[in-house]
Length: 259
Length: 258
Image (cartoon, rainbow over all chains, first blue to last red; front, top):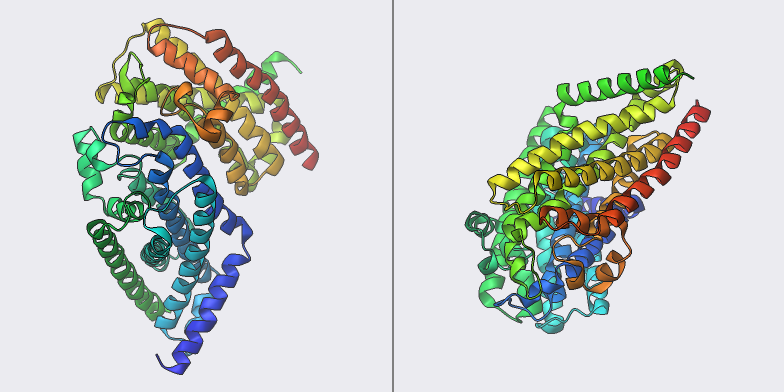
């Protein structure tokens, strides 16, 4: 990376992170809401660990991947919302008149997304450990889980940015949030796929890439080092990153071309 | 003020809100789609939870979660009424309405009527969807009407709470304040398993949550063995009574704000 580009990226990452941190009304829900749902699920479905064939002794451990996925989703929505606001306020137009490159614009935004994801992940790990979650893969597993969360946030962030540049509307980005949310619930988030009794639901969960992200993260907590689950999770995360960033970059090119 | 001016305002507000709901479906779709989604996700994805030792519900897992989903949808349909009134304040319509209404309490009543009509529609839609997805009915028609009445009470509670917030905040930015308390109240109840199978803080809180008693009363109705009805209906009615004061004082605040 040339020094000019790295300077641009550095400034834009700093701007993205500062803007995020200066919005406690946005940051706090992105941390508390997944934790609240984690607590509700862990308490409400604790008895599910007694189903014959359930893969974990504790439902708390089993459901611990949930806040990581939901947190990544929140970050994506924030990234898309921030970019849409830049478009709505004309900031992107003004920026396009400067020598800042498209790559720097996107990298700056995504740097903020990854930064927020890591902050969320650290809080989730701390709360999880305090609540009694035990990582079968140990400290290394925690690190891998954070990397996986950051990649997932990056992928979702790319999709959020793509929506923002395509529509130029924060409302449209927010409107897509429930769709992402539905994708989480139509996965193996609450029960392992082999314990989903309804055939069509199990089929949807099997085709749903979110299932593999969750199962990869979950394996680090309840199984230890499971190469298959981790390979699938990283493959899905990488595909999400490639698709999200490619779409966002193409959308940005079109948007700046119009400007 | 005469009774006729109260009912005239209430009916006019209700007619307008219902007309808006029909002509602008985007306003009501979330309150229909989310409960249907919950039904799909819970009845489809979690049905094996019914195999947990100690889980013994006569109607099966779909009927078990159906009751909570009906009450949740009714309560949230009420909460969404808050968005309507907040949006009306932002557009300036509510201020004109406050000036024009002969009896302003009719405005609150109008939104309550709207909530009841909309929640009935959603509950019936859910009922059909649950039957299609294989829900077994053990209760009689009277029991089902009893469940609908519980849903109406939950709806009135949700509507009055949301009106109180919306009339104080008068902005759609109050969205999280409209939804979060109702969301927490609903989810801190026995959603997926009976009360005695809950654990952690959810188990501790659910025992004191009035929604728990309403959900259990509703489940006893759909199972055809009505129990705990006075507590279920009574607590919701008490909440509605308290929240009537909350909504009416909100109306006073809105009047004072001009």
